Image (tube, rainbow, N blue to C red; front, side):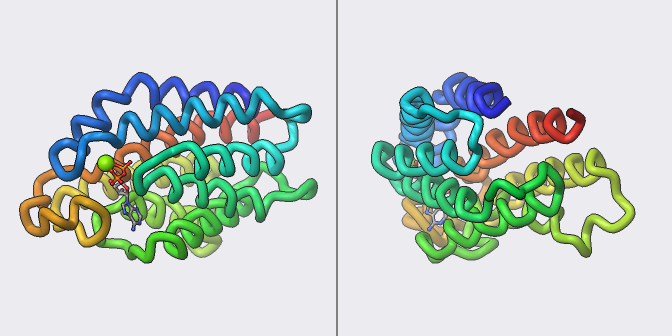
Length: 209
Ligand code: ADP
Ligand code: MG
């Protein structure tokens, strides 16, 4: 199951490599797709080197380290940190429920913020990751089925991408464009949505097991 989820994320990022780089060409240096595809390759290699591929904490730790070490650009170390921080909150007692997702996304978001010092509204991947995390908070899930929460999280991510079109970049290379970055999606927000949407599909399968 972990391998299926990883393969699915790698497939999406590889397929969308040119699309992500094209988005980055409009606001940055046009390498976001290349960076994400390199991260995907590094993740697969790290996974294949593992003896125990069923232990989610070990898998995420290995992938996070590989992404931090092998992926250039700003996004690589940020995604790597997010994965490493997510790994820290998982243990053998973690159950595949929304509460665990809340912890995992909370840790990932905190890791990105600690490393990159960005906030919501700066036109970064956080404009997708923070709203998705919000959907998993206990106060926002009362009376909702897991499926409903997942759909809300996906929609919040989509809205986050749309929101990045309306604001100027305040972090990363796109911030050099200032107001001229308005009208364009943030490439890291788009890749975050791609990754999260893909993972949600697998989380549902795990839950339905
Ligand atoms: P680089 O900007 O070094 O070329 P990438 O193109 O791979 O790296 O990644 C760009 C993406 O990184 C942006 O679209 C944005 O989402 C994300 N990003 C940049 N700076 C930050 C930051 N400080 N915090 C969070 N995300 C950031
Ligand atoms: Mg770039």
